[in-house]
Length: 187
Image (tube, rainbow, N blue to C red; front, side):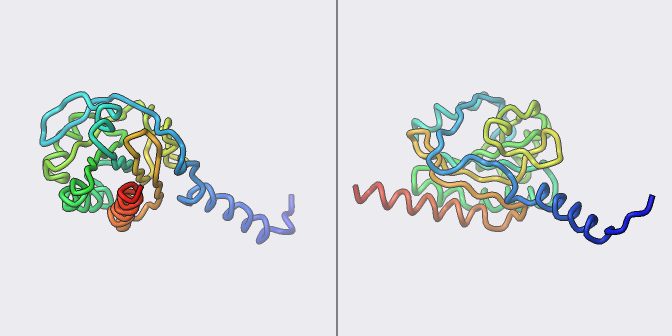
């Protein structure tokens, strides 16, 4: 069998592959959507407990971020940045929670070493929370993409950001939180 248009066919296959792996191809929830509530096992400062999104929202906005895997380069950078910014989030009455498909034993260690005991990380080994937030990594069953949400106390998503690069997640979620707070103070 002779393939006459191999370069065109190859380009088409590559374009489809790029689209499937592109963060822009993910079907994340958008501002205005209702955030799915969840309860799961989490760890803060090496201590495990049951985390409830509904309970946290009673206290104020929640910055919920998904990440692929604890102790990987990008996820470590992101955890450090969120840890460094926790006090800034608190100024706006917000809390932070990270979620990955890792098991709770791994996250208990990660919560101390990389999250610096500043915010909890939740185990989603069965990827139910990842699925509910459409935060799955394309082509990687069960693994989370790098997706950040800001959720208002009424349970509505006010901001979503998806990028495999960890660098802008804290900056962007803080800006969204500041803008939301300013708009609600003006009302």
